[in-house]
Length: 289
Image 1 (cartoon, one colour):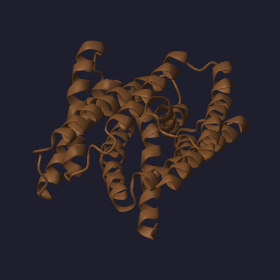
Image 2 (cartoon, rainbow, N blue to C red):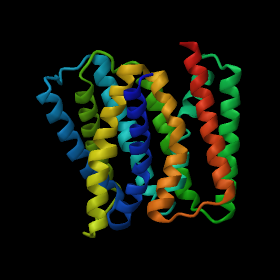
Image 3 (cartoon, rainbow, N blue to C red):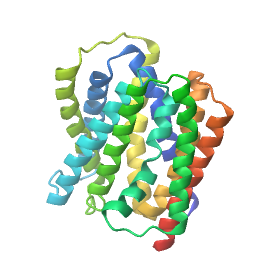
Image 4 (tube, rainbow, N blue to C red):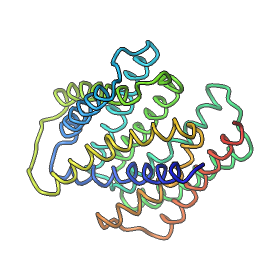
């Protein structure tokens, strides 16, 4: 892995992890589904416009269209939609920790439903992930965390896991940025329908809302996705996914730094255990290739 790939992986992990803090700021002054709908409208149109400027086509293969629609609904609408709603009542660090377990759930689902082998290192990583999550959530639940918000985050990461497994390899064939832009527009349409059914839109114009919205739209929303696809193309999905082990650390650290969210000793230990579990799973997958 060369230095450019390492720097890109670190940048992706930082941008992905920061999205939970910016989302928490957004939902303090705006209704979550309406805000996310607008974000995806802007990000999607920008993505498609940039892709067209680069000569990419929206004439996708059937597999690419399937991946675009599935990922647009499951990741952009269900996963992020539920997380935005949840972060009205739970801390950004909690949402980041739950979301960061996605690589562990992918490995577990691959073993349980797709017949993929589970090496001892992967098994140890899964056990570590369960222990780490249990350590953190046990403390939070006894401390009075909102269980409804926690449940929404749990459903969201399951949706993200299903999306990841469903579209594995389906985006091959080029037009990556176009696919990303179209996925966001699919999420926009889905969330617009959800907004009309479940929400009365509200916006309280403030400078923190404006800054967080612009940042979320351009950095985690567009730049992080572009960097991720570049990284996958350069070093492969398995090696690129190794950088996910940084997400629990970074998600918690950014929330503590910018939002003042408190961290106890058990939180720090739990985050470290989860990160090691993710790293173990990814290293085990890497050894197969």
